Length: 538
Image 1 (cartoon, rainbow, N blue to C red):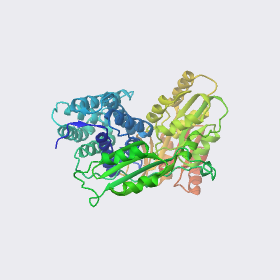
Image 2 (cartoon, helix red, strand yellow):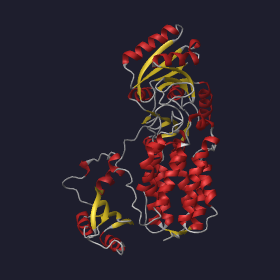
Image 3 (cartoon, helix red, strand yellow):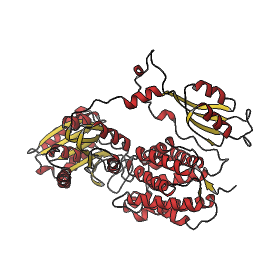
Image 4 (tube, one colour):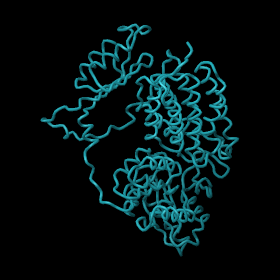
């Protein structure tokens, strides 16, 4: 049977299937990293982004409402550059579906074109050969389809694969690394999953594991022996319909929906093949669970006391003293986090290479602060776009993202600028000048061979330029410092990583001090992952 329209339930099913397909292939996407160090995280970032959209999905009828709820969830959950672009694609789709209850193919094709426009507009300098190109090519190639959604997605998916294979011809860095674009690869899997979901009889893969997310701590003292259950329970479950209890072919799931609406509130429920996903607010969850067993058995159940949820949401956070300016920075590693705090950062968000924070993480940090202006130091090129997206959603303060792309750049900015001494425009101009002069590099192990290094070598590099390679990381470090002009510096700051023993870091520092007698070599146990050493030359 050909699909001729898409309503809210079908759209959410497609999003869930796209997320599940990406989940199953996320390691393959991660391994497409261009630079030869173990920092591939595109698959994880894109999965967590689309999963946030699926988790927020409302499938109550109209496709416009479903698309909007997915878009909002992805907006807050976006991580990494590819995740942010993915969230903008689906934001554009939601705009294109605005006001539409049930989308036919013409309306959906228009929404997909809106996704192309929104994603390109979200990037100040769009680069071809990325996820942007793969999505644009796919949408343009399928625009002539006028039959069913199956035919449309056949064309869409075929071109997405072809476009992905062309990405190395558009980006030299991909060609040199011998890989295709990782963001585009993630999109190919999402589109393939969405296509599979058009078949109502398809058995779709599970959408990740609930055990992946650590449950938030709850203040149990907020509900005492004398409390009254004012808000009831937020009850969510997946019910697998059982052929021993119902005729799967003829069963009308509205029987379940009607029951839930008669005994609960805020009902969101939809059927995905033999699984019914339910969200309902009720004072008597046990009654609902017992009743629903007449149709099937439970795959997952989650029940939360909404009085506690209400308390966590509305309890007053300690109000910080008002400041003219505050700084939010990003770091991974106990030593680096403490260093930034000691230097005056107001909030240090845990994250960095392979651990990109979400837009929601930044927004939560902004909400902690009581400042007229907030300056953000992302310290990673893959976090800048997320920080900028979060800044655009902040209310009540002027948020400026200073585009630091490394720990060295963030360290130099925080140590050089008096953020309370001037306004945002002046600070941004000063930061731009400083960033242009920062000399900083990293040392890490190569996970594959390149023209400059063998697999397993330690490489010293700045951005994407490999400047040294050696079997021992101390040798790679010293050669990197030579390439960076350390002989003329006054201060050489060295952050050792989590895998570097203290005595080895001390020996490396002593070697550098003997090599550069006119410089002061300062070591700090940064504890960062991935990078064995981070060096800053001043």
